[in-house]
Amino acid sequence: MLEQPIRDRRAERHAATRSEILDAAWEVARAAARIREAGVYKPPGVAESIDWATAVATLGRDELDPDTASATLGTVLKYREDQARIRMLGLEELVGD
Image (cartoon, rainbow, N blue to C red; front, side):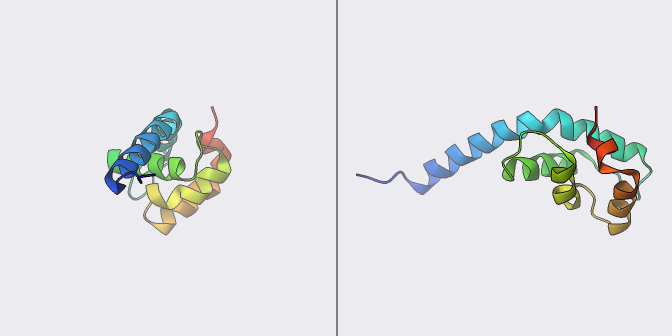
């Protein structure tokens, strides 16, 4: 049996990851908007939000819950002070409807 070329396997993996990213995109976008409203030093932009959605998908999650947000907060907030502020305000509040 011939193995699939590495490039093709990477393309398949990338396509799967993209669809997983789309599943969590709305929740990540909503949470990023709430972070911007919280008055952090460096509010997340589009690139940070995409990085965050990618991190969520990489963990195999299709939604952003408080545990996932906690594990991936560093991808959207680079400053520890910002991360601490959001944690203090409550991750449940951040990802809730």
